[in-house]
Length: 41
Length: 466
Image (cartoon, rainbow over all chains, first blue to last red; front, side):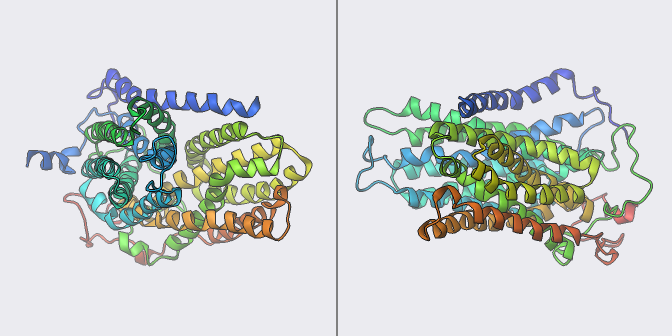
């Protein structure tokens, strides 16, 4: 049984799922990076 | 009853057409939430002023009392992962994630009552015990599922999830500060309200993860993937029963490898701010030290993905050899960077060290899969997490007590950490030796075709399929 990547799961499903976890994580990483830059000031 | 059956493993089996790339975000939904544990210290100061509001009053809690909340949670993380590992493995990821959501969010709600009534033991029970169980069950819940979906890249798959645990603090820390700001007034510190809101947010996130997650149908494999025909010495095609793994030397050797790698990293992670300022007085300010800690957190998270993915190409044992050899060299270099005043060298050493600390966590599930097969890897991983709990005690004790001993015996603060660095390097030598002795598991531990211990209907042990 092989994977049919887009049969049951749509691209929208994937974008929503990854966005759901990726956006908060990216915002958190960005905030941390801004704080980390103080090391070089 | 409908809810209970929805949580069953049978109702989690993916239908044809389900994309396996939906599973990492499901795992991240859980790991990003429970990763909040690394940001718990945000609440320390506000919780010491619940009565005094602007400063600590006589009846307020002390930092030393509050420190126990995290310690209890860590102990219950390791304990629950070890005790409930088999239950998680056999019940499937959805039931485990749902249970983890109940425990984790429930821990916040009980803690909110504890804060509201100013009852510290309720917070120990809430965040420490209940939340700790949520941590343990949630941590191992997606591991074996990811490995089954990504037999071609097991390191990368588990690395993605465990990276989320490292990244959870990046979300929790600013969110906590923002919520505290919203709920705190001139006459009230808004810790209880913040706990309630965070509990609701985390419950929602984790439930979404449990709804998305699927297990592959029996016999499923990725399109175009063929399992290696040539037997690889350190990658088994057989399964080992969860409790039989404890009888193998491989389990305990990997336990020590993880424990020593984590001990070396955890000790400096907690002391990075103070250490950098004391080793470079006048060069690293408290603000710059905070930036250094933030940068270390990013490398801790990134290392989880990088090293686990790398292990898919160079092998698990070789990856740990890199951790031990490179770690040894870097720990030995740190005192030199201090003596020549090289801040850049010091920072670079610790960023690589901390990336390998994270990598040690994320590479170990795939290492266990290679040794013990896929069937019980989540449960075996759960038992191995007791190494983390042990390292959580060894690491900080080593760093703090040796520094204290040196300072009281007249060693300048700038050099007080040198002995610790050499001891950490020594620990990695022992880790190297343990890793060197890891060989393939003896065939007598493999599950047989007739072995019906914990076997799901329709799924025979891998040894029977091979």
